[in-house]
Image (cartoon, rainbow, N blue to C red; front, top):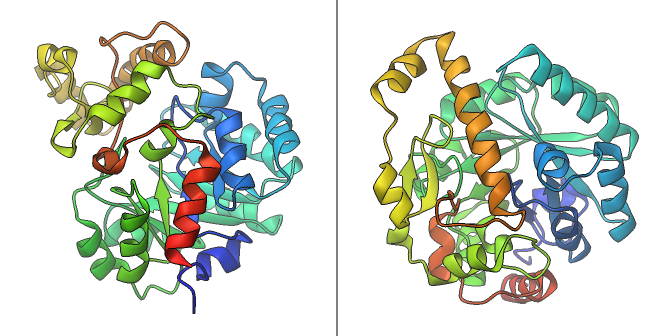
Length: 325
């Protein structure tokens, strides 16, 4: 049987077991649509859609829908950082379901309410996890699949290797997706041969013609090797993988003493993360709206080592399909 035929393709109705991971700030509508149109599944990031790329939420969904009729998904960060944020996410999920979205990727919290809404409409929910404890909590909430975020991922990376995570998580009865370190077709095939039912990629899709990130950001990905990707706590309060630049060296990668104290408290950690988030949203928004500077945080994973050219999404997925077919 072809490596392309997996529980992920069967469950989600796609041709290639590959998700374009949701990215703040890089998930512009054209990129999300292009991945789905080429046989994978594009996952939109709602805050990126609205606050970076300037679309009213429902209008942004309809723009994506005008570019492809294939399935698309949506990311829901379910951390209870504030009542206002949670209510906004609930409205976004309701609107997405009304507009025909039937796949959701949840992270950073209890996904039960998303599962209940999605399942009532015949949808599916996959949950980001970094170890078995979080996987079991997601399964208790009723999720349909797990996205295993490993130590090579961009953004909020995990602590375990892809191999270690697979050993820990396989056999739980739901599809398992490898997230982190997939930048070329050889890595894609290796993940499927390891036993994963699919992969999630983010960094590879920043270096595409459809992504609206600045040319300097894309070039930084092409120029970087995996040792250039470091973890910083100064973006969100928890380790985030970024490309090392002179600015990163100047600022350091550790949270300051006050922030570290705030992050240790059960209630104060949410306040501190809100402070980090407000600052980070502004800086990340600048990096994709034409005011790029190396005083920005360039999120990327260690898959940069396999990325050598800015290409159309369709060309990338064509190679992946051929390699795994």
